[in-house]
Image (cartoon, rainbow, N blue to C red; front, side):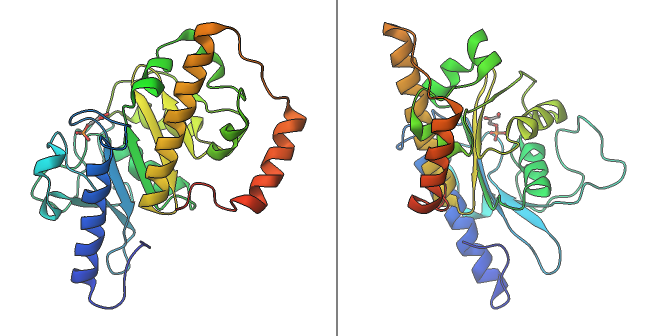
Length: 245
Ligand code: 13P
């Protein structure tokens, strides 16, 4: 689903909203979330204004309909409070996700992001509580680490959920990457499509589980930079946009 639409903008936006709801509802069955945690967004322009559609805050996914999805502009208005719980301007009957700033800042800074999944997967969230993962992220213990865009999956330092500090930490951890962990919190994945962001979240959770399993029985061997360079070169042909569906 691409951003914005020229013809039938309302019907088109309804489809986009439905795709956001459908993706959010898949988080738990696909094994990357529990309960009401997490949030999903899609870059979505209205007329000439850049913005995003995002799941509402603290609503059970089973109860969510397209009318619960909020839209907010990408531009940060002058006078916006640093720790405002809600954006100064949004369109929706419910408040947008408490992580609206994280989603908004990523779209503002990342032209390759058209969809974002934030979730609390079991293994990724467990690893994100360990000092070794705070320091090194998930290192290149397996070649599929390349899916996240680099030679590791970084872990953003802890900051309170919904804050500018958390958004800044995640944006930094995602430099040159499509996914990162959030310390004592969870994981973020971005892609060109909702399907791609969900698929990447599932793959990162598989990697987190494999790394956790390896740590139970020994010290994993790491691939060196030269080998990871070969992997990235192969991925460029094998899966040109590995996070897209
Ligand atoms: P929301 O329900 O406000 O999206 O918050 C869930 C969450 O995971 C916060 O990090």
